[in-house]
Length: 533
Image 1 (tube, rainbow, N blue to C red):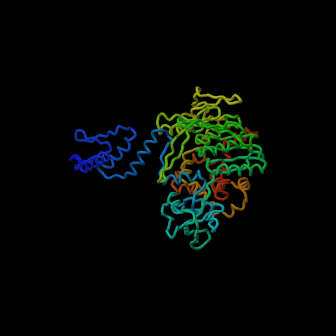
Image 2 (tube, rainbow, N blue to C red):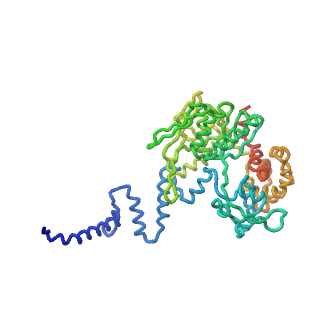
Image 3 (cartoon, one colour):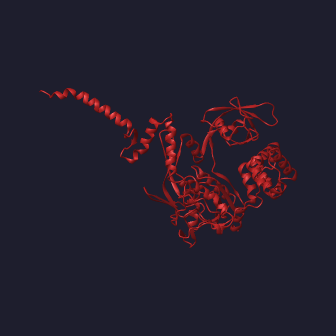
C-alpha cells in the first residue's frame, strides 16, 4: 500500500504538538498582552491555583510556597465566619490535646518563679510521682542542660519535658533540706488532662461540679464526680459552665441526657449541605429530678450553650449569671496528608425551642470578638436591663417562659459582675504573677505545717491570713516593683487575702483547695445556693 508523502513528517508534527501542549500547560492559561501576562483559565475555581503558580514562577524574590499556600488558606477561611479556620500540623497536635483528654510527658504541674521551674504537684499515678518527684522541687537541669536562671518560658518548659511516651528524660532537682542535686530518670507516659476542675459538697444537700471543657473524657469524669457527690448525700446540684469555651457537641448531649427524660429534645443541627439532625434524650438519666442550677457567663460558649440552652428550653434548670458568648456554629475537622487540617463551619445548631443563639458576625472577625469586651462598656455586665435582646427572635418554653435567640443564652437570674474592691494595685499584683509567686514561696517554706491541716475543710476553717503575712506580701510586692498604694491596698485587702489563701490551698491541696477557698467570695455561686433554699 502506497502512503501519501506527508506521513514521513508525522513524527515531527507530533513532537511540535507535544511541545506546544507542554508550553500551554506550564503557563496554565497565561496569555500575553501588550508585553504583560494575563491570567485567563475560563474556570473561576482555578484562579487561586493559577495565581499561586504565577507568583511562584514569576515573583521577583524566592518565596516559600508552603507558607504562601497556608496564608492563602487562612485568609480564605477567615472571610467565611469567625470559626472556620486552618490549623498547621504543629498547632493541631497541641490544640487537640485538651479535647482528647491526655498528652505525653513526665506528669507535673509547674510554675516559673525567679526563672526557675517549681513543681506545684506531681500528677497522681504519673511518671514523676512514680520516681519520687515532690511538690516544691526546683528543676535545675534537663538532660544535663541547665534550665534555671535562663528566663525560661512555659512553652520552652513544655518542649523540654513533653515527648513521646516511652522515651526517657533525666531531670536534676534541688529540694529544700537536701544538699546537692537529686537526679531522676523519668520515662514519659500518657498524662490525663481533666475537664472537671473540681467537685465537692457546698452544704449537706447541694453538690457542685465545675466543667472547664467538653472533651472526649468529660462525660466519664462527670459521672465519677456525680457518683462521689451522691454518696455524700447530694440532693440538688450546681453545674458551673463559666469560662467553658465548649468542645465536642456529643459530649454536651450526653451530659444533657443525664438531666432530661426520654424523648426530650436537646439540640438539632442543620446546614445547606447537611439535613436536619435531632439529638434527643434517650436513657434514664441519673438526675432527671431534683433542683438543678447552671452557672454561665460571657466566657461560656458553644457546647456550654448547647447544655444550658437544652436545660433552659425544657424548663429543667435555672440558669444564673450573665449572658453567654453566642456561638451557634458547628465545625467539621478535615485533615490533610501532612497532618494539618481545616475546621469548616458546616451547620448551625438550634436549641429545643428552635432558637439559634449565634451572634452576628456581619461586621467582621475583629468586631465579633470585641463585642464581648464591649458588653462591659455598655453596662451589660452590671445591669440586666442593658442586655441587648432582639425581641423579634423570641421563643416560648413548654412552661410558658420566654427565651431569646440571636446572641447567647440570657440567664433566668442575672447576677452583676462584682467590681467592689477591684483596684489597679490588685490587678498588677495578680497579673504580674507576684501574688502567685509569694503564695508558692510561703507554701514551700511552711509545707509541713500546712499539711498538718489534713483536709481542705480544716484548712479553710482554721487558717487565715494574719496581718504579719499580709504585710510580708506588700513588702514582697514592693521588691518586685509593684507600686505601693495604701488607699487601693485597703480597698482590695479582703480580696487579696482571699486570693492568697486560695493559692496557698492550691499548693497544698491542689484544685479542690483553691476553689473551696476562692468561692467564699463568689456572688454568683452564693445566689445559686440562696435560690436552692
